[in-house]
Length: 180
Image (cartoon, rainbow, N blue to C red; front, side, top):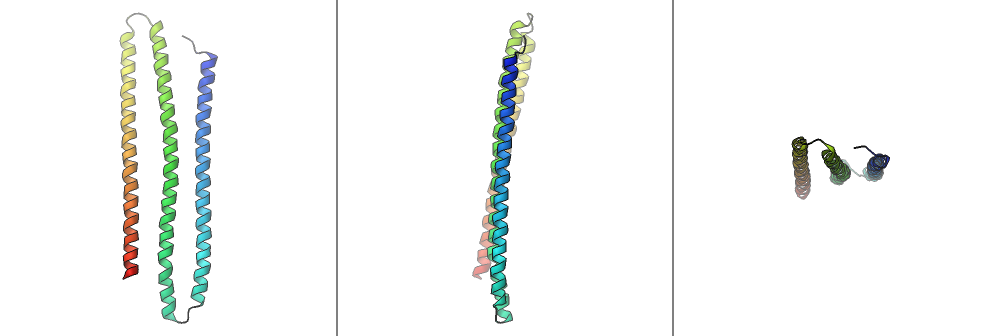
């Protein structure tokens, strides 16, 4: 059994495609983070100017204190929104990386099983036990990988639910303080 140039070319092409896909995903994530940061900086700058103008127009100390307390709520809500956006971009990027990794692992498994089957055809009599053992080990490794992936996805879902719950709790607390 020999590896043909076509097989090498196909494997190389698949690897290059996977790398380019990851690079593209990474670039898109960097672009989203840059946009989020630019918008956040612009918003903070504009709010700072508006707040400075409002504070400069205050007629007494009581109005000054009142204005300062009203500035906190919008800033806090924007910080929560920014954090949530950053988390969403990071989560999307992680999901895309996971998909590429899963696809590559599946392709590797298919190629390995195919190679194993070809080797079994050319192997001497009695080697079918060894081939079967290798296939069982591969199946066990795949099962462990699948279980790990499921656990990681569940952990991500739990983390997302916790972030959403914490965000809702904080928003509820700030609204309660504002109403009081």
